[in-house]
Image (cartoon, rainbow, N blue to C red; front, side, top):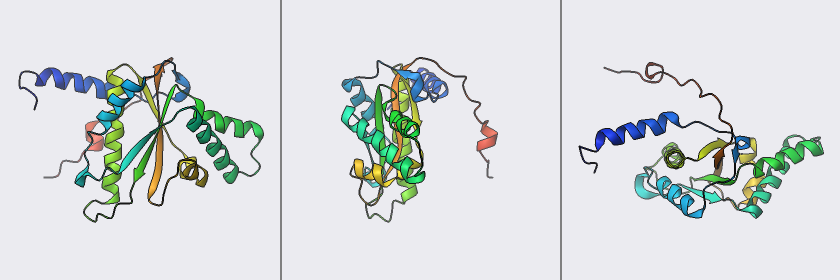
Length: 199
């Protein structure tokens, strides 16, 4: 539990992390990236996310060079499935997406557990909280981060590349690294735009 004397400083730090974090595209994230020891700290932060019934309804794949090559090929196959006349240049660009940024993680939601008290939506919320914990822990250590997704996440090729079973879903990729070029912070909604005060 936080000591009352430390609370204001911690609140200020928390607010600074939340409001300064922004999406950095993979092309803008360069080496170096966090090492394994740091990644373990970031993943431990993810593990602190809310998890009703302790189902652990998600996991993260930390992708090394071979796994990134598999992901790239899955991206290319997914494009070929959507567009049979995709050019070699387009397929090469799809493969290249898996190679951008120094560190890449794949976030997978596990919705298989038969637990009627924990709806699928709640499990996905848990994954979102885990990802946000990881992003804020990375931000606190000076690392940039970005999330990417798309139709390829739902492709048969990607599922096969990472052995996903029925009820498991690839949700997004998380890229971590050093920010080479930041963009202007996006305009965020006001409190009154996202909150309704019900009497």
